Image (cartoon, rainbow, N blue to C red; front, top):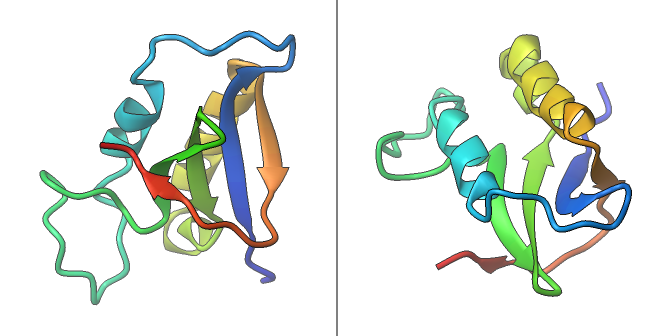
Amino acid sequence: MNHKTLFIQGVTTSGKTFRPSDWSERLCGVMSSFRPSDDDGDPRFTYSPYVRPVLIANVKCVVVDTRLGDLDPRALDFVMNFAKDNQLAIEEACEYDPKPLT
């Protein structure tokens, strides 16, 4: 499978800022237990390497590594359906230098 990095942007297709303002942290928190087998991070305190909140050009986003689907296809479907159901823009990444949310 060809893996991709996707950005779910906190802006709806109609151009409105998505609410609540902590949506990206909530979504990533729900997905925190989906990790590679060699990842020893504690899902209670760290995000999954496959689903991470970032701030890009002052827009809250979630970076999604599609390898999540190799681990559990339903998990990737959940994240992508969340974006589609809430009419959030999804873009494929080429290169980026994200600033972690603080």
